[in-house]
Length: 295
Figure 1 (cartoon, rainbow, N blue to C red):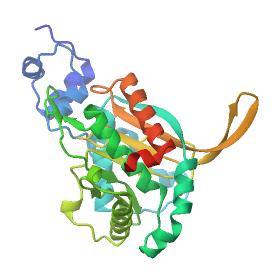
Figure 2 (spheres, rainbow, N blue to C red):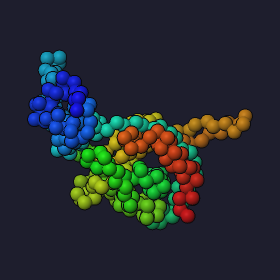
Figure 3 (spheres, rainbow, N blue to C red):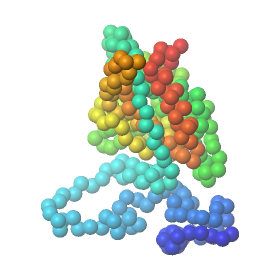
Figure 4 (cartoon, helix red, strand yellow):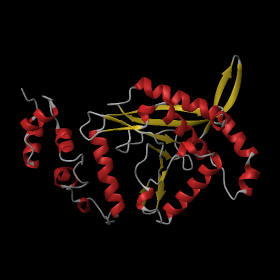
């Protein structure tokens, strides 16, 4: 096999003790890059600030002015390594969309008294989880993972949804198991419980990981969109930002509509742009008419 690899890739592989000729035979590929070496070594990108990246970060910042130091927490270090690997190894694309949330807002207002009677706050996030669960059932390729060698698609017959929670200790992603089997009130209660226990660092290891797909919700903070990074072995992640009023036209008549921005990042090795567009079209339909989700 006529191996094609850049000099930097060959040097990187030699430093890591990886035989590129053997790797080419194993993968059946004639063109290899640094990411192939990382994948062969277990899919881990170099640690943040490690020797392979020191030429970028080995700077005497104090020479420019006063500085102070803040050690990264263990959780932050783990997140940095995972995000670096995901960004380096996954060809990610982000599809941007927005959904009419007026019907969701109307239901939240109509059911506020019942929510209070149940001791709950009915948030829009519960509707998002319900819509995502139904879409994952309707589009099985989104509810899947690639095998470690990248040659087999593993389709899941369960729907577990991760909810990213911003805590003082770092980002945590507790998981709602079997979200497609739960009603709106049960989802609301579980979201509130997981978020509270994540803030208090009372989430157990068995409540993290194994998600079909995750949601990163910045709606309570702000923004009009972003590109969330796919959390492997998941194949997609949904980002949500703050709802804003958009003017839509019905003929010559303007109509203000509350619209929520949605950002779907996905692994392009498995999911194509048309797949993502259809997924989000269905998602937006469910949010626009949420009673259909509860039939």
